Image 1 (cartoon, rainbow, N blue to C red):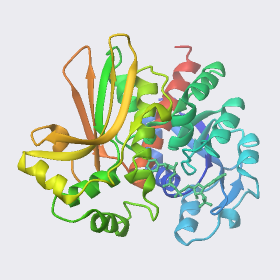
Image 2 (image 1 turned 120 degrees about the horizontal axis):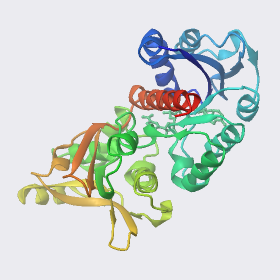
Image 3 (image 1 turned 90 degrees about the vertical axis):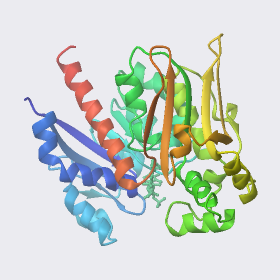
Image 4 (image 1 turned 180 degrees about the vertical axis):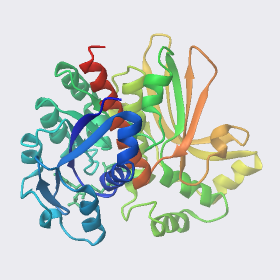
Length: 353
Ligand SMILES: NC(=O)c1ccc[n+]([C@@H]2O[C@H](COP(=O)([O-])OP(=O)(O)OC[C@H]3O[C@@H](n4cnc5c(N)ncnc54)[C@H](OP(=O)(O)O)[C@@H]3O)[C@@H](O)[C@H]2O)c1
């Protein structure tokens, strides 16, 4: 097998980027033998973890990860320090920019600028950052297309559980008419705990102690996060042009134990369901709201931090995907799968296929 080298630039080197880096280090030989992918990390930029560029030899990724474990900045390693994230992209000569900075659902920054900068410079992009994709999908998709570059974002929805790539590749040719799923692990965990008799505050506190919920949980419990994910899904796999603000959104803060008890008596569960459907005029509508689901429904069985997505299409009965929706290893794997997709597409491009 011909081996092709891919030069990678990380922007944002937090939990998810490190998860991806860990997979790259552990699977270095396997990636080369099985997929013909050899990688070289030419730059890493993060305000807290450090900024380093080494275009000739590449950054030693294992050493970079060791420094992260020791809570030391990257700058002691071999390479040029001190570049800002934008400078690091512009000067990296990378093939793929891996964007894993924090999600901002107000304006998509700083990820938006990073992605635009990389595409403008002729790089492919793999990102786990929901903000730019949920808010600016069409702009970024069109930019990537005009530059003939690839923009992949598998881990923005259900982390490393394949839903975007599955729709694009495995369900190619099937017209998606509806989507229905549990796209937020934190709220699913809270609702699962509440179904066992804990009240909302106790369940939230437990989720925070276990690292499933942030100190400010509003992005999850007010359903902004799953609203962003269903927006990404409908635009990417249903061909819609929906804004995040078009999604009808209701969180779980008004649900009490009595609601869950009543649901249980009726053989039902309450789940935060994100859904989207296409009408006869091809218009797509989406919502996220607490929904009564019969116990016999597959989605009722999805508990704790697990996520699920049911896909209804014109060509065969529904397909449901269930898997982890968060976690550094899982989201890091989503990035790795994007890097491999980009690698495959680039190899085909080179062969003129
Ligand atoms: N964690 C998950 O399970 C998961 C799953 C799917 C998707 N995601 C998404 O993946 C992304 C990364 O998540 P994470 O959990 O890895 O978050 P994280 O640990 O907070 O890492 C984000 C990193 O980006 C850095 N950063 C902020 N602004 C930057 C800039 N201008 N240039 C370069 N780096 C910058 C942050 O530095 P500071 O500390 O200084 O802010 C931080 O080190 C987020 O968009 C998240 O929504 C996460």
